[in-house]
Picture 1: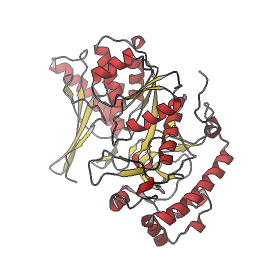
Picture 2: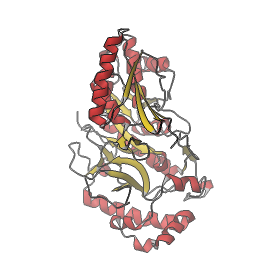
Picture 3: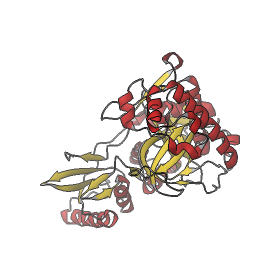
Picture 4: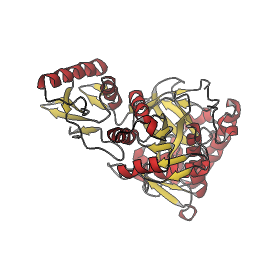
Length: 434
């Protein structure tokens, strides 16, 4: 299949030209923020930097960072770069701790965001001939509105199913011949599992591609979804603070996500020292939005751990690629002094033939951390033979110890006993009082 672009002149722009565009946009944006966002201007003044000091990306390191703590402190209007009368939309995070992040958009901001999502759909092979089923949540969550707008820009027939009502989802996929599915990877896995239970084989399903994001997922989970649904599964990345999904997206090479560099400048920093790291280093991802009007994030610390690569891509896109985040520095579990990412546990489970439905329960008993992994068996592997179950659990315990460097308790449970999620899957329950 020939590579398909939404805005080829931008997506394949020569690197030197892209840097010139980014530098110009950055200079304008820093002045915009200085003039219109007193909260950030104060941070700049405290650091002894003014717009005249910023000539291009090489000067980014002079600017102060923004973090989620700043967003909570400035809530709700303290980081706005435009008057309310110029704003047409808000979106908000689904966070459960502290104040929610509320992001503001002008019509211009919405247009740019939808363009980013349209690029992602085209990279997955989408055209105006496709039927795009958007099964991300709508409302305050950015997933549904972002991909919905991107699908419209591409000209695809858009089915705004939102999340939930799995029977109706499958009915529309079949009856309306949906070719592209947009949802969380855990929900895609659940749809595939449900279709298999209905006796549907991959060749019976009209889908050809899926665009999945909003939660961490492994390569093993990708292959599982691709095999079950008979599709090619593409990753998409975004944050409400930066607009939503579409900040970066995978192409047909499926080897890192292209960042929309005409809108966002990416850096990788050491999360402890805050020093910028050289290309290829693994560290915390930081973004500067260089043309957002209403909510112009400068050097926003995402807490996502990954690396960047500017190696040429076979798809022809010249934009830098970010690796799939290994985890989040704030979601990372530290168990008995060991850094543990849920994706590592998922890899062991899937490599041993277990589906993606699992739960990690962390607790502290007599001042010692405990790690309990509950794993759902499929109907095919379910047995009441205690000896066989214990043997399987032992295999998983050994696999996890090899991967993590610590011992976990594994409990194999009966099919359908772990609650299904129609949005972001609740993978981790941390009961420790820390």
